[in-house]
Image (tube, rainbow, N blue to C red):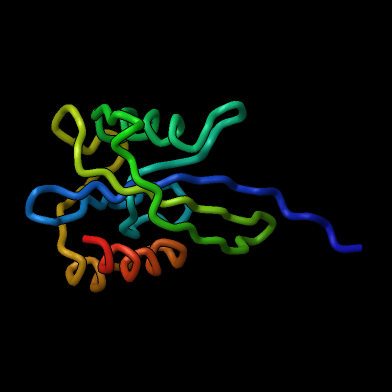
Length: 136
């Protein structure tokens, strides 16, 4: 009988500024997929809803506050990762309080969707670009 993989439940945000650029950050050294560009976000902890986890992660990673009513679900991705199975939910937000700054990551940038296509990104993040292209 095949062993069931551990579920890794992750949330991410496509933060869109007034120029329709999206904030991405570089994964820090010492983490899986270090050096790849990704949407900010992180793991959903036990007892958290996806939206509350995303709000917590955005505060920890970028120092901003997002009203849960201002986050719109966009799409999801799923992928097998060694002994884990990733379920990644993407939300989009155009409004937040505070100025985003790189707290956990060394680098962050506002980029266009075409710029994003030229960046090295984790495999689960890359399909999100097509979805965002349809709604931005």
